[in-house]
Picture 1 (cartoon, one colour):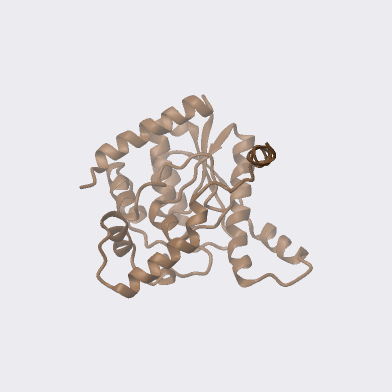
Picture 2 (tube, rainbow, N blue to C red):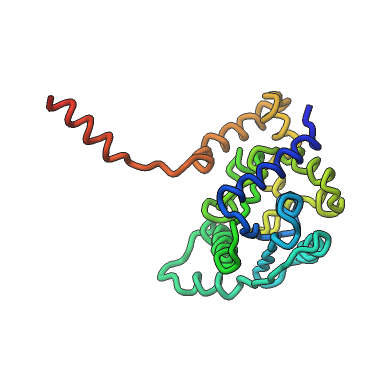
Length: 251
């Protein structure tokens, strides 16, 4: 039922409207990993703004085996790119800690430093930061809060992995980028290895509610419930409401 052509046109228009209201003349700045999400996000921004207003930031943590894919995307789109190796920054933070970091902290540190780097480039280049997360990843919490989950606008947040791929084909991105197995870039495994199920199964469940394996359904539901807070605005205490309630009780 998904009309990729229609979705692409609508998303391009949405990006144009965002910049008209939130940064007329500004650039779109995003981290480029060489995976489908950053590739499709960058291509959508090029369609919306033109290649001269899109800036890619490549951020290897030391050696990155697939960084050639990130270069391939930037060259294919003809966008400006900067390479910033974050290894020294990551090791610097780890070395400055007065205690041993947990394994999860170590895994999440690089994406948070990457996002700080993207914002530094964006602020220096009159930019707005593109969030590249998709609905499937967000659904099960497969993103780092204040890392890749951050950004100023998010073109793909309501598209599943399969839909992102279809948009990539509409945008005529190289198959090597669209079909590249998603790798988290953190622990060396593919997303699907870490999750324990495929994105095809997850996407079908998200869109139709249908799933064949009850155990997989339970895993997905548990992950979604545990990580749903990442998809919401940060809770904030409304002091005004508290004052009004107190006054009503006193009256």
